[in-house]
Image (cartoon, rainbow, N blue to C red; front, side):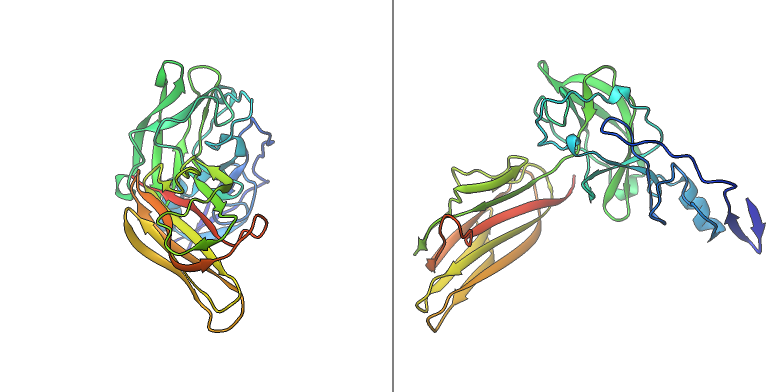
Length: 313
């Protein structure tokens, strides 16, 4: 390290070490400054930073973490794998991803044999707030004797600016246990015609229901965790100058509208989106207020879907 004019220059004599990646090995680290595959080094080429900024980044895990992007860790992954995180040599801090999308650990019990393992590990005590800094949280593994049948060693957790979390994972006490990453999204359609007043549209054709929040029987999505969600719903009018009016309803309140009014003989569709913060247990559904909406088994023009963008305490 060389100092010049109160600035710090970092230079590596050779490329930093790299490690191989496989389904049961820890991948190479994510670098917030450069798109590189370096391991635990914040810079991979000559970089000049102010002393104070460099010092903060050097020790802040929000800038020095390994990207853990392994789809089998998802809470909806139910294949008969038996991954075991005790076999992983954990080093430093990690950020959870699913195919490039930032995720976090679940804060509630996960069903057995999910997350690509036998006893899924979830975070007891919830995630910290930004001002909390680094905290220690208990980790539980769900098995036959209950949601915390296995009490794994506590881990360190930190919330970072940009609304993501980093974790200092450790080896669980035994196999087969693995850390989980929570996902929630659903997409469904109504394969027919809607006419007049329909209090709750029961979307009977469900394409995906990750996290199990949507009920095909009732047409209602129930938020499995507290967080920021985004929803979309669509309508399509037939020919003949008809009107169509759908509303998104949250806990009994109409919050967003998808409306069509056609004065001439034509056909058109309309898609509406709505983003909001929901508490765990909030109920979300769509009501058809008046008019006519058209669809058939193949058109998928009357739809309803949503996803969890960010989990909160």
